[in-house]
Length: 100
Length: 475
Image (cartoon, rainbow over all chains, first blue to last red; front, side, top):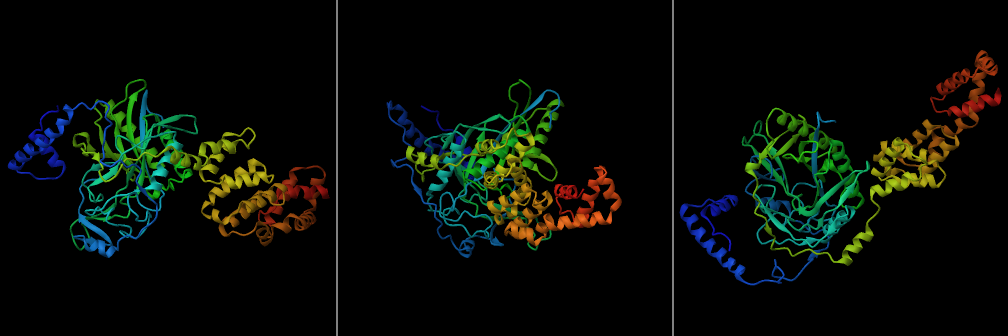
């Protein structure tokens, strides 16, 4: 059995996901997410000795495609979807700092 | 560079190489450097909702080829999402391999005999490219960034070494040898200046025999020279901090090429929490033995093996000759050396002309055939051409192509080496009777006088040995 989900955990995950949650929402989601985790924890009460871990519902492996070029989108169409563009590129607010 | 006192540096490198595939890692957009911005993009590499990735078979094969060349174990692997927010990553996550990489373990032997272990070499996708605009002088005053997603989703392999490197020179040798392997396997074009190979260096220092110190990671080194300089700077910086009583904080640092310094990008306290989790849209990758065998069989000889083979054609090679062999292999020019040697050219001459003249004119190498190279060297070896003339002919071949015989005739080298040299010598004898008399009396120094005069008249195109021969027949 793992430890119960804490309010701080939810606040931390929300921060990483750039979600701004009110106190009420934090309370609500801590409870809801806690129930989901609790349900998942039920698994650990089962005797799974000898059962191979499964990470995917499909039994498939090695799904690949040939390395053949397909048509890309037209740049005009692509940039028309952007809030702002300049010199054929997406324009975004100034980036603070370098990429992680 | 030698570090002061009993300090020792400990370095591990993470080398990112873009794979030379036709298409991106998870979509059919062209993987093409230098295209007009945002012309090779689609819903998958733009991260549009509902789009689904499908793995590029060729990227898997090139990753396996790299692993095999590095003596890694090819293992069943999985893909994860590495979550972070940055404009050049439109999905807000990068698909990468995490705890189960395609290649585990391995090693790379360097020309100096040292061995660097490989921890892993895994597949991941590249990000887009952002350009940061300053605010001043622009009509729309606000500072902003422009993003091009042509590179978004280009397949990468990240090769992580063990902390086995002990000097900047060794780091450079490792990166150079690895680059040679990436080119040999066909995985990469190795063009560091185009960003197709980028290096992060983990650097720490310690007193010899002590446990490892705290490391700093220097990001995005784009040339072997930067790698070398950045590591030396960082090791000295850390030593200075420690000797002044400070402590090294684990952090990510940025190398400024112009200033020649590293500076803090972010510290461990701001450390990333990437919330890695399995990419649900991709299934596991477990190349079966038959697939692995096909890749293994298609692997060409690696640079180390090629160097050994070529060096064997030299009799007791000197260190300088071994360096020349290294240049020949680095530039993929063995075909010229081997053709010349097989046709009877002295291996020392064949390797020297390749490592100097051909390497110096490498941009024109497409104009030169092994036959033309061989023919030129045979003429030099027989004395028909002087060394200077042979180099001129090679330069001409590299610049414009053509046939050596035609160039020799056009430059007048041919006549010079037969009849005209004789008549030039005879007229000089007639014009300089005193010098000729002294030469005939046995003053050998005068041979140099005549050679000098011949060179002056022929603008340096005569063969010194041939001049002496002409003099001696008339003595």
